[in-house]
Image 1: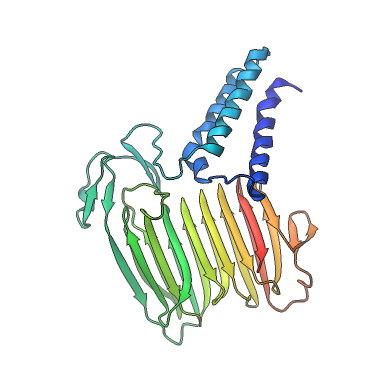
Image 2 (image 1 turned 180 degrees about the horizontal axis):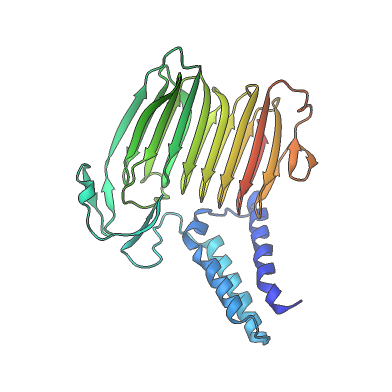
Length: 332
C-alpha cells in the first residue's frame, strides 16, 4: 500500500469503528467532542500533506500517531460542557458563525444582562408565548430556529401553541403571521452575541405544546442543539429538521395520508421512532454515517420499507441525509 493512502484509510477505519462500537454500546461516544475538537481533522490532513513525499518509516509512524492521538482525544475526552475558543478569549460562536467580541454591548441595552469572566453576555430570565386556537386552523405551520439550546415538545394544549422558555444567553423571539387561513408560528433565537452551551441544565431551553386538531408542518433549523419531540398525539404532515452537531430524538404517531420526514445533519445523533403497525419507507443518503433500521426490508440501494408499504393508505416517508452522523429508525 502506498504510504499516502494510509492516513485517509486509517481515518475511515477508525470512524467506522467508533460508530460500530457506539451502536452496540461498547463505548459511550460524546458527539459534542467532534464539535469542539474539529480542528484535529485539519491537523491530521496537514501532517499527511507535509510528509506526503517522505517515505521514511518515522514519517509514516508520525502520521499514524497523529491520527491515533486525535481519535483518542475525540473518544475519551470530556469536552462537551466546555466552551472551545480556537483563537483567543475574544472569539466566540453563535448560530450565525464566529465573531469577535469587541466589548461593545450597546445593542443589548434592551435586555437585563450580565457578563461572566469570559466577556460573554448573559441574559437571565424566562418567557411564555401563547397563540389562541381557532376552529378555522385546520392546518398550521411551526418554524423553529436557533442553536445552542434544548427544544422539548411532548404535551398538548387547548391553545394552538404555547412555549415556555428559559433564557440564559440569548433571547427567544416569537412572531405570528398568516398564509391565507393557515397560521404560521415562528420561534427563533434573537441575533445577539452568545455562545453554545452544551450543558442544557445551564443553557437555553424551550418547552413547546401544540393543539392536536390541525395538520402540522414543523420546520426546525438548529446548530448545536438537543431536540426531544414526542409527536405521537399530533397529526404531522411535514417534519423537516436541519442541524449541525446535535442530538435529535423524535417519536412519531400514526401517519396521515402521507407524513413526510426529512432530516439533514452534519455530525449528529438522530433517533426516530415510528409505530410498529405504520407503513414506512426510508431513503438514506448517509455519507460516512452509520445507520440502523431494525424491522425494515431493504428494497434497493439506500431504500428500506416495512411490509405492505405500497398498498397502505397512510404512510410515513423518511429521508435521511448526513455527513458523519448516527441514524436510527426503530419501531415501538
